[in-house]
Image (cartoon, one colour):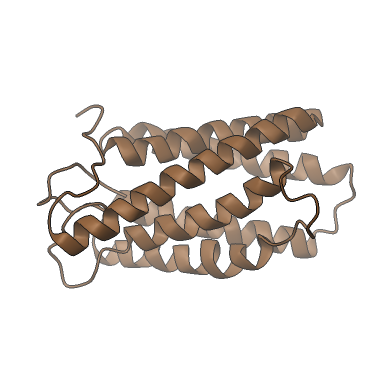
Length: 205
């Protein structure tokens, strides 16, 4: 997850001159799909399903694949990308294990999720601030994710289904923004030029 529209910069949405392919589009795609599946449940769109369709993908795609993308970002010496992808890969793996192992009651589960999402909202806050140094697309991923986590943890603590639904809608938007950023990384990397724009950094420290 990095930088600007400059096709020469090492970004997930630009040409990457290095010994391995840019792992950021893969990490973003893994994050987007798993976020979309769970957000569809939170939004109330998947009521006629098991509501657990996200679980396997939290382990296999949003979890393992995103974690691998984070490890490859370490290889690329991308501090931001390695921290973001590895942390959210761990988030999905941890959430899946919580769902499988916690056996929380109907009263306990929203509070459990509230604490988990509060903790990740704290982490996401400083990542959101640092994303202003990269590009608009990455910033919007973290901005929409921040809102999603805030609505969901408040909804969990308050036991408010309306807030949880709003969090679900925001999660769908987050997934769409992440998919766009991933798609930009794929086509810009393939063509060696900016085909899908990602915008400039908001600030430069």
